[in-house]
Length: 229
Ligand code: ATP
Ligand code: MG
Picture (cartoon, rainbow, N blue to C red):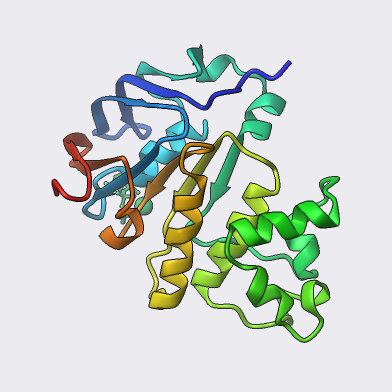
């Protein structure tokens, strides 16, 4: 009963306000083709993370609808939704556990799949190069990893679940340019296979996006590709 097979997203006239607040998102309409790479940019407070929370079902819009593969997001069963979605949060949480366990997260995932996901996330070399390789303890008391590297590990974790749609909220803290390049490469490789919606603070992260939308005070201000902006 795979409810989400293609990973198409459609946002129709979304309006959202937090409880008792003014509208944070107004009249958001956007069509995202399966396998497309969409970048979201905008000033702080423009509503980027809020839009992502609606897509992740943390909140429900007051008006409008979100469709995944033509189905109302609100009606998709949790298990199907979770199986289809991958999230790379802005500040990923690493468990005090091995790198392997941090990717598998208790799911029944083979060693080969863990390594394939780490390779796809461009973090295999880093993990294989740790003192005990994939057995190295991460998280509290474990090996030190930068916030950019945490995002790559979180991407491996997300990709290990073979998502149809990947959401990424780029870390705001300083990411060194080498790690930045790895994130860009990993996203590029997903093109055509996994729908990617990436909130970016640096335009370089979404250089390869098919579509870049600019949020301005909760409204979609512009759309185009990297060249156009
Ligand atoms: P940033 O680039 O700083 O991450 P953003 O574009 O992600 O900003 P949001 O976090 O979506 O912006 O915030 C949009 C607006 O909604 C802001 O005015 C913010 O103060 C408000 N807001 C965000 N989260 C909440 C919340 N949980 N409750 C009430 N208001 C909120
Ligand atoms: Mg945000």
